[in-house]
Length: 98
Image 1 (tube, rainbow, N blue to C red):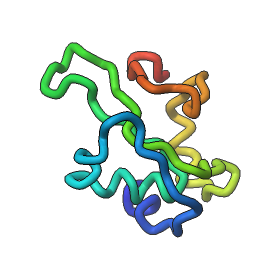
Image 2 (spheres, rainbow, N blue to C red):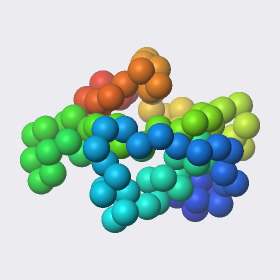
Image 3 (cartoon, one colour):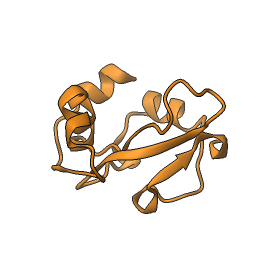
Image 4 (cartoon, rainbow, N blue to C red):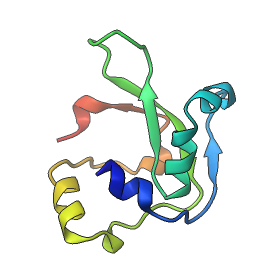
């Protein structure tokens, strides 16, 4: 999966959420994935495995449309679901993912 998304062409720019500019200097791949239409979250409290909250670090200017994904990638992604719109989230509790 990571190779597939890594090889996609950019479809826009991205917006850094909050004060994460220093973070992106160390994890530039978040910006690269966001350019391809993906939202990028990271653990809110590192090394606390009981905390299941992730914070939005980077959001894409243009989101990736799942209708354009090949069937093999789409079938993997469809094994999980989230009945929320990512564009409105600042934090995500991964326990909400089915």
